[in-house]
Structures are given as C-alpha cells and as structure tokens.
Amino acid sequence: MIHNMRLIAVIILIGLIAPSAALAEPACYDAKVRAQPIDQVPSEIGDCGADCFIMSWPWFVDLRVKDVVDGVLPIKVVRVLTVQHTYRVSRARTWLLRRNTAGSYNVLVPEGGAALARCSAEVAPVEPYIGPSDGHTLDDLRDAGIRRYGHHTN
Image (tube, rainbow, N blue to C red; front, side, top):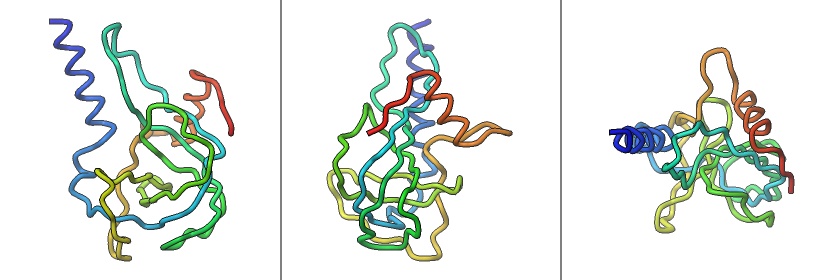
C-alpha cells in the first residue's frame, strides 16, 4: 500500500514537471539563442520517500546571451526554467526559449532532435515548468533551492 502511494506521488510529480497542458501547445520557440549558463539553481523538491528516485526536475538557469540566432530577446542575461538532472556544462551552446506566463522562458529540448519552428506572434505563452503558490514568486522558489542545495555559479 505504501509503495503504491509513493508510486502515485512520483507520477503526480512527473505530471507537475511536464504538465499535459503544455503538450497541447504548439511545439515552437520564441527565441533561438547562443548562450552560456552563468548560474544554475535546482528547485526544491519535497521528500517523496526512501524508495523514490527523481531523474529530472525544474532548475533556474541564468544565461549570458552571446547571439540571438532567431527571434527577439532584448536582454543579454536571461533567467530561464529548464528540466534537468544536474548542472549543465558551462560552455556556450544553442538554446530554444519559449515565453511562459510567469514572465520568463522555458527551455525547450525537442524529442529526438526534432526541428522546431519559431512561434507566430499570436501564440500565447505557455505555463512555466514550475509555478509558485499564491503570494510567492519564481524568485522565492529559486531562493528556496539555494537554501536547500547551496549555490553553484559557473
């Protein structure tokens, strides 16, 4: 019984990380940039039990944008949300960014290396990979991650 409850908790957690609503959104990006991660903070994940293993979860990553390859990104340093397992390498690479409703960007990683098109101006932002509870912000969630896991900058 307890094992089944933990399995359900993991399934729910996966559902929170990759919400089904995001799957209904057009697979497109708002900006394709060449950027280097300069700060990476894992979000805080609650305890799911002794026999639970979480492979990937939302992280806050600050990118120093070297070049906007496609689309528009008016700032040179942008905080994005990614879903990853550990710290990414610190070298520059190409990132696909999708506007989210929290005023930030989700990093897209197309399955199987599929090519994505740029979103049209009419396409609405998507939900962020992680959302704060009422009265809190994404920065509050980032700060909680720093308090729990420490802080690592590139």
